Amino acid sequence: MRKKFQLFLFLRKRPSLKARVLFHFILKGTLRRDFFAHVKKEPGGCWIWTGQRKKKGGYGRKNFGAANIKCLYSAHKLSFLIANGIQNWDELPPVIRHTCDNPPCVRPSHLLGGTYKDNVHDMFERGRANRPKGERNGSAKLKLTEVTAIRKSTGTLKEMASTFGVSITTVRKIRKGESWKGCELPRGTA
Image (tube, rainbow, N blue to C red; front, top):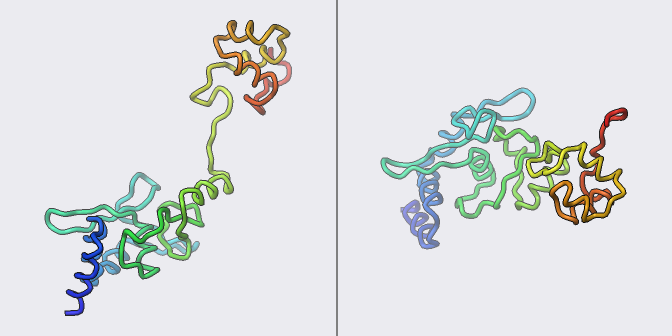
């Protein structure tokens, strides 16, 4: 009777399909068992998800559902939910961050709730922001030799812009050192 009342209270909130399916497994009491069947505790501290993954070395995923309704859940989010006793998928924080920077890790002590802003801040703080510089940047319209020529030239901004097929603003920023920072030709080249 108590489980039926819990289900009634839960469904009154009009939760998402993901939340309804997950709540069913919480009530059945099989969520924890099904989840931990796919966890390998490493000696280094991380608990590695051994089930389905998004890609090799990526975030773990777990399917829950009945005959015709299946929902895919992120393994680290499920771990956070189980560890913190959260009863509703919709009550999870927007982002679950890893303190260990190991995507397949599901150890609750390595997971923190947060916002997208927190996650991006972590990425920069830990040096995981991979921003290619210079020619390796997919948006680059110039080669390093052309940038060096612009820096050394004495022509007007307009002349340089038309010569290299870029805007006057681009030439100005290159000359002022506002763009192509830290991109220099090795000494003795060109």
